[in-house]
Length: 371
Image: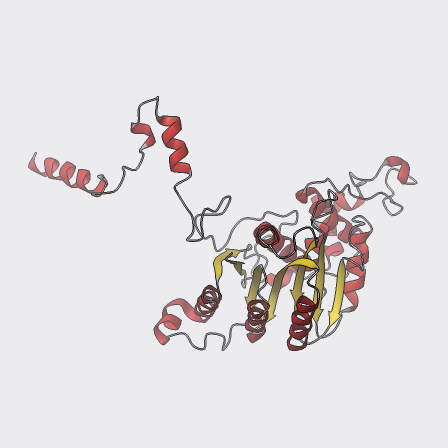
């Protein structure tokens, strides 16, 4: 009997609310007349970060989240198994194979010679279509057109955009809204995709943000790399077939080393005072110290927001304490160092991730400039 009493006493002590803290479920203990008022107060008093109130942001970090995009890759022993051309990847999957031969929802029957002919389509996606529909149509169209891109890279670009795009664009729009120097002037958002490769990720930023209204800020992407892959123009033109707002004017490729492009951006910003511009910097899998170069470029240019997904971590943890490297490992230690670098330069920093079945190097650093 004494033992049972002791058990209940200890249990009550463990689950009781500590002194000065509210009970675990305060709303349930309120009178019915005060529930709505108190619930509203609680909703507006809980913050998920130290950078003011954040809405629609995760309160915990998932290092292997489920897929959000239209292309889902199964977990395998090696991510390299998904390095298959997108067309062949579709043909090997019964459900996806059917989508290649199906007439797209944005194509009218009259636009095709026969019900099964999707090679003669002339219709385009509506600019009012949702982001999920636009992205699904793009991925299917890339597969149908036998675009020179791997399934892994398509999934990677889609998931990167879906997990960072809204926050990056929101930060850019806040910068434009708070820019008091160019009232009444033209404004635009520029996405700089550095170390871009073929540039699919940067193209998706334009494709998924069509100019829905005349007042909508125009968005363009500048892709930067030391050489232009032959696949880039095919991908851009292929997506432009169904997204007419994607063009050479809205997606530009600049062949330049990273350090030289930094000077060009700074000079453009100084000489273009009549235009209110908010810049975003993104980079997916810039090898090793190139990611640090991208971050330095972004910070020096005072861009509105940044998202990078690093890889090849060898040597990138330099400057972090030995104990931190030993406990967290090289990769996490390097990204912690990078997050502190961004924070010290007036950026709010958060982590996100894409599914590990795409790549084990799946962590994204997302930074928004404090205004």
